[in-house]
Image (spheres, one colour):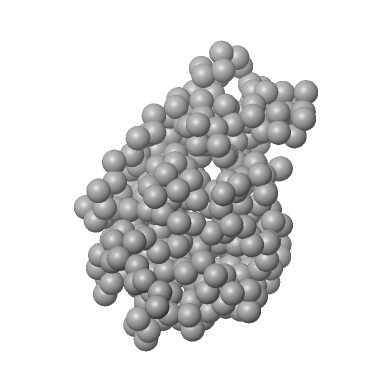
Length: 341
């Protein structure tokens, strides 16, 4: 007769998209907190090197129900952290069906597989894009959700599926709406590795290392203190820590589901970020002013009151210069990994 695991034993957490930017940091946060982890990733945008050697990596798709059933069984999965998906907003406008397939249809398949297997806890990587162009800032979870692009809609539809599923089945969930995720693991174990990334801090540190010859500033005529867009930047490791804490709450309160903003509640303009990059690197990056991009709100800042009340979450890396320093450190390591210069 097999021994029954003690109640305190932590179940395995399956991280979808765990070879990607945010997913790989969630894997590190879970491991650092003593959770068993497994990863599923089709490696279309993720990297095998981003997954620690001692973490099982299943190369495959979250739409593959048979593979998911095997992973659940082999690993004893008791929770899912779902990061797999497509995230480039302009591409979602050009190719909406790709986003509704990758982000919505595949999420439905994953949720269905979880229900069939009796996986009771589900944490979803959502986005502030569900709010669209909010008329208020800071943005609370009660701010109207009015996406302005297929990316935002694809994520909002998944939130709705989770809400309805949790009502009908013994599953609870947490949807975390990210603001602007930046930085890298302080120990340089992972970071933003995608070629052609559009995140401002990633692009700026690439320019600082000579990988780009300039930085484009899209719009200097917004109704903000210096005319450029203001965003709430959150360090990826603080974000990953929030996922682990949210999982603990889901397990402690199995009848409760959560939806929470993930941000620091303060913003920096594009020019303030670029000034900070110049300061951290002790150099000056060329800036080129271009026209506004469609769909860019003047300011997008979170109200993090709910997450601070709900979780014992204490951000450790909220300093902008530190976020940039960690991104820069990772960018240098990434050059070594790829054998560049």
